[in-house]
Image 1 (cartoon, rainbow, N blue to C red):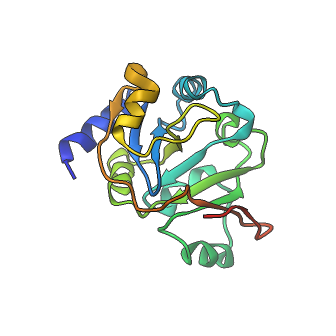
Image 2: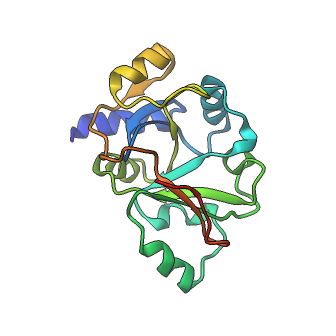
Length: 185
């Protein structure tokens, strides 16, 4: 893990830029979740509708609390069984959580990642990061840096190189309220 690369990626995110980085299964595209212009640029780049919502990844649950309604001790215990790890949870969002993050939903998709480089990036940022697969809508996600460059060329501001986390498919998505699995691993 190159500390200079982490600091550079964080500087670019803080300045409103878009980055690509490795996750548990695929390369992700990310930006500052509270920067509306950066998120819109990301959605436009991917041809992704805002109504679908986005995932936020973090190095720990505390980075996500400002976006979520308070969790019960039982809810936190449930999350602790899968975090840090490759499970994305739909959790009740605070009403003030930007629509560009939650889409048409009253929940927000969040994950405390166990990917070492991505977790270190979130710690360096000091806040969560938007995480959506590095692909154009309807196309397979990039699984390496070359795939990111082929898909996006110079339309991203920084590419954080690193290995994927070893999953064959994108992370599981589960709904905390219903207990349903919306996307299996």
